[in-house]
Each structure stands twice: as C-alpha cells, then as structure tokens.
Length: 144
Image (cartoon, rainbow, N blue to C red):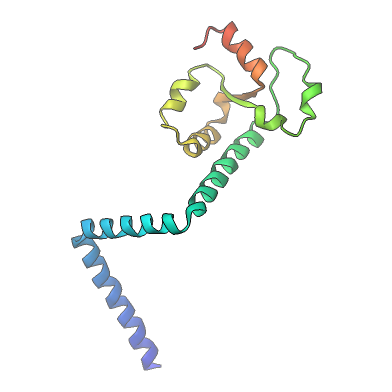
C-alpha cells in the first residue's frame, strides 16, 4: 500500500518538475517537437493526409446534411434527371444567401474544415445550390 502511495507522490513531483522545465525551456521544447513531427511525417506519410482529408470530408458532409442535402432550386429548374445520380451531392455548392461568400471564404485562407465549421454554426446565412442555379443567381444579382 505504501509503495503505491510513493509511486503516486513521485508522479505528482515529476509533473511539477516537468511543468517548471517546460515553462523555462519553451524554445527547446518547440524545436524538439518540430524535429519529432518532421521525422514522424516522413516515416508515416499517409497518416496525416488520410486523417485531415477524412476530417474535411466529414465537415463538408455535416454542412450538406444540415442544409438539406439538395438544391434549394430558386429558379424552378427540373432536377429530377440528375438528383438520382450518386455523385449529385458532390456537385452541390454552398452559397451565401446575401452574396459576399468569396470574401468570407478567403478569410479562412484555404482551411476548408474551419470554413465548413463556421458555416455549420451560421446555417441561416447559407443555402445549397446546384451549379446551374448558383450561376443563374450570380448573373441575376451581379455577384462577383
């Protein structure tokens, strides 16, 4: 019993010392982690790519499902021919209802996961459109 207590106390002391060391050696720790991460990425080239692409895909799917998974169809175009296609969902475009979506997307500097999470938290400002409806809206509203 006393041996277990001693182990716990030792762990607590080690954590305290580690916090002190980390706070005084931030640059060294940062360099060490960068070296480790670089080496890990070289030895596991597909790990990070696979996880990040899956995460981006999941974020986009979450938004598509939340927005109804089909074109809002503001111009009454007959979508029946291609709605049955398996790749129909991949073609849907997320549209900012009031325009200005391009500027907003550029603010995320290419980080699509953050952008899709932002959209998920602001669903009322967005809609799903097929490419045809999106272009018609763009032309009709003189959007850039």
